Figure 1 (cartoon, helix red, strand yellow):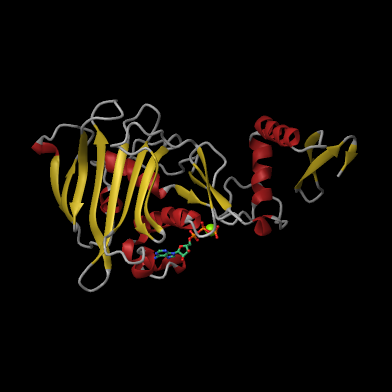
Figure 2 (cartoon, rainbow, N blue to C red):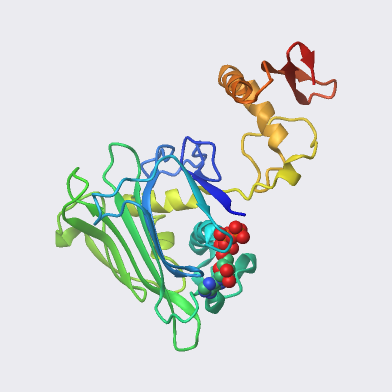
Length: 313
Ligand SMILES: Nc1ncnc2c1ncn2[C@@H]1O[C@H](COP(=O)(O)OP(=O)(O)OP(=O)(O)O)[C@@H](O)[C@H]1O
Ligand SMILES: [Mg+2]
């Protein structure tokens, strides 16, 4: 039997999404990431994913970008969960560095993550756009093993296309090899020396975007850091969502979905019309159901009422 996972980019009901509300008041970034979109990505040598590209990359303008909701369908063992885990790995790498990220969440260390019979680094490439009118940014990360068999960041690069076109010359505004490299301040696209800084990380297991993305003089790096930091990964499990937690609206779905009914309460309270619209759409898709509406219980929980030709289920 084949299973499928969904990658939902912003503004879609999603398993992976940046949070719609950017709760951080982070002056070092240009702010709103709610419209950020991953247009494409490439993963190499990560588990069963030896080399996979989805959507468009900076040097493949002819490819279609990913859409806000992506369903990945494939037979067992084809790498759907691995794909999903790769995004979790990147998010963890930002927080704790690449070595610890390899060991977290039962990943089992670098050697188990690296594709079998491969000696090349694990590599990621993410092509993303902060908003529909923004120039796309590409992030490239390469993780290899050092002489002590410990994973480190072999290279890292952030680049942006010059001009509004989806192809053309790209300008690297962060480039590190083994923790040493250069970054360009501000938003300029020229290679003026005055804007360039030489950088050196004290820990080559940490991401450069984690360190330099918190500095006000590097707003473009901050944009990517902010984007990565606000990925929200949800391992929704239907069993967890079947529980009946205490009443109380909650804005965000928990990782396993066990607060689903609280999120439903939040939607009903804060987006009543949209919520009813969603219920109407669900009802229209289920044969035999005329209408779905809500009923509040004495202890404040919200029940969904399915009206089946006049009767209530
Ligand atoms: N380091 C590795 N190199 C190559 N293959 C690996 C590596 N680690 C795990 N695998 C293989 O990856 C596969 C697991 O892939 P994954 O769990 O992502 O598949 P899936 O598409 O989610 O499958 P399912 O539909 O069963 O959930 C297994 O066949 C496993 O043997
Ligand atoms: Mg799976």
